[in-house]
Image (cartoon, rainbow, N blue to C red):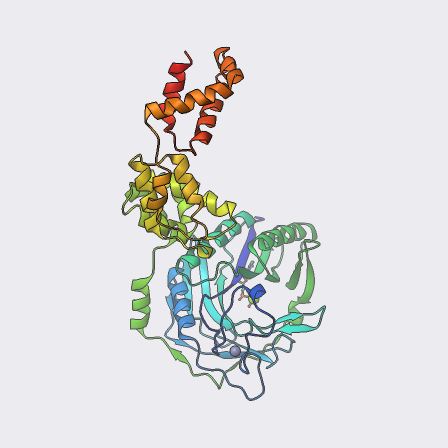
Amino acid sequence: MKKPMIGLEVHGYLETKEKLFCNCRNFHDMKLIKPNTNVCPVCTGQPGSKPMLPNKSAIDKLLQIGLMLGCKVNPVFLWQRKHYNWPDMPKGYQITISGAHSIPVAENGKFLGIRIREVHLEEDPAAWNPDKGTIDYNRSGAPLVEIVTEPDFTSSEQVQTWLKQLVLTLSYIKALNKDAGIKSDVNVNIKGLTVRTEIKNVNSITEIIKSIKSELRRHEKEKPIKQETRRWNSITEKTQLMRTKEEQADYRFIPDPDLPAIKINKQRVQDIKNKLPESPEEKLDKIIKKHKINPKDAEVLTQNLEIVELYEKVIKKINPKFALPWITTEWLSVLNHNKKTMKEVDINPQHIIELLKLLKENKITALAAKNILRKFIPKSFSPLKLAKSSEKISDKEKLLKIIHKIYKNNQKTIADYKAGNKQALNFLIGKIMQETNRRADYQVVREMLEKELK
Ligand code: ADP
Ligand code: ZN
Ligand code: MG
């Protein structure tokens, strides 16, 4: 049986205010700050510096992740030193909970059909640029979570769906920084044909998928029977040999004498468990069943925690079906058009409620509502004031005057319509909308025009 076996060691950035062993900030968008401006003696590994006690909120987030992935949480964590000499790690070792003598933080879980072997925590090394010889310590010491799966995946497509759902789920508990992305070691072999290759440090979901496809092709062709560690070259889109099993790195793990063991009592685990928010699947289920929203639209809503939360607030006051397209179609397209995420804009759900009420009560047209929605970037406002100037015109006398004015200037279009070109009617309606600043009542205008043109 020639079935691919794929296992992942996924690393993600924990969403915390501070780094793991010092009070430097835990930035996610490194492009925003100058190199080496977010550093201290601890995270630059100065001789004699000692780590502070580990960031409590990082430990809490880690426990949340373990529980969300259905793992059993262990009562004691031990910190270990993982030794290696590399420019990104000046103190000569990385502090980690994983390693030779370690007890995993959490183990034996299952997430969407894939068994989770264990969950770990470690500090991120600095960023070394081998071409320039420069090192940036801004992210050095940031808390990284490591999630190790069993080799249960059988295709790259399955890995892709699973990873996307993993990132989404962990962003729901605000434990993982979605924008910081993930990196992963990817283990691949073909059962009964080849021996496992480990591809180190692949940088995004897209590259992970490419690396699996490429490596499976290589396994089919070369049928490797020696265990190897390889690196991914995203330019050639092929893996390259780093080392064979015999030259496997020896990290000389020892317990870190500067850090006490962390004891996790049952109550802390229970408290975190009780407070775990809904997962994307639970939200999806609720949106479909409770609010009777079709699965496709519910899926669009739940792809983003901030969007589904906005929707849930809006439908406290507005009929869910009525509100739906205004979030899934209109609001999302406003965000996309402006290339903004919910985190980058300041939206008060109350303002959307007011807007939809005006629309529902027929005080403004749908077009006017769309117009106001566009103005909600970067910050929403109460649409009640604006509504006055965009009040809907349904008064027939008023409309008739406008229609006659449009007639005068569009004689040819009218002739076209009379000659059978139905499109011409829409053109005329468009002109009237333009003339009234989109305030004319569409239905009324249409009926009037049809009657007039007979
Ligand atoms: P190592 O310590 O060498 O990294 P582990 O046994 O801890 O090896 O496994 C690490 C990862 O390798 C896990 O994600 C696991 O699922 C994966 N893995 C183990 N055996 C295989 C295999 N035969 N094929 C694919 N992946 C595997
Ligand atoms: Zn620091
Ligand atoms: Mg490994």
